Amino acid sequence: MPTTGQTEDEAAAPAAPGPARPRRGVAVAVRLAVVVVVLAVAGGGVWLVTRASAPVASPTTTDIPALSVKAADVKPGSIVPVSAVVAGGAGEGTAPQSAQPSGGDPLDGWARKVAGVTGIPARALHAYGNAELAMRSADPGCRISWATLAGIGRIESNHGQYGGAVLGADGRPSKPIIGVPLNGSAGVQAIGDTDGGRIDGDPVADHAVGPMQFIPSTWRKWASDGNGDGIGDPQQIDDAALAAGRYLCAGGRNMATPSGWWSGILSYNNSTEYAQKVFGLADGYAKSAQQVRAG
Image 1 (cartoon, rainbow, N blue to C red):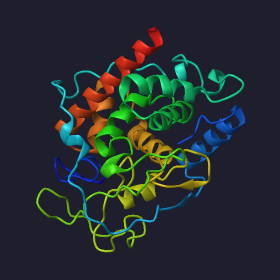
Image 2: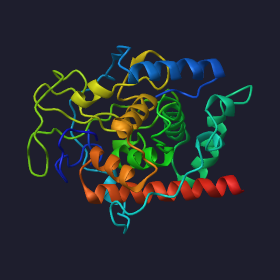
Image 3: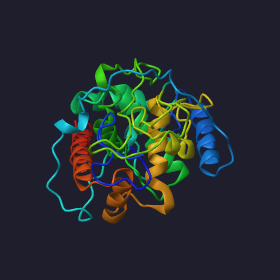
Image 4: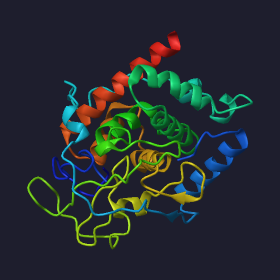
């Protein structure tokens, strides 16, 4: 969950520990239109309407996705996860649009195949792949990978399935994903309310929200429209994944280098263990996807 100045374990357990998107959609024209939106948003030229998916006050589950993930035994800053096959099967130097055949979205077939070997829901993979392709157009130097976004999504919300939620075809969980109150209790950072409870349902303390666990104030800065509907919704996984990609790529960061990758993940959550868990997941997802391509 991207937050500002968060230290290890301070964010303890939103839908997972973590800090505080153009859709490669149905046709080339749609993809191009969304990329234009992303570029405009990244440049500050467009105001997105943000939306919350009807947050309601409810007990917070203790089933934190990250607890079941093992941290990789790797030294921070030493290496990056193995290079993942570009989302949709495009070549490294291929622009998103030129990889799209007529009739249908290549991300759909790719996501179904990769879902079978990674255990990631195909709908979530589509969002991660879409975000990678969008960032390849908007910020080619960043080289953010869908596998890294998937690693974060697994830790933050089990790919939009936190607390028994089901990720729908529209990219929204069946119930809003809302993390623990950041009220300064044991192991939790204190972040007072910044949104009047509009996004997280709590007018007293902030909560991280959505599949990628954004703090409301951070979402305000990075709100993105990954599915091209003109609305930035932190509960919608295309929007959230693209916002995460933009967040990680900020400041000219190159996520394909050891220094860039570790810096990006630690900016998302300033925890070495968190970053090592993302590393292990991203590395495993990328290797599995390579096997699919080889097959």
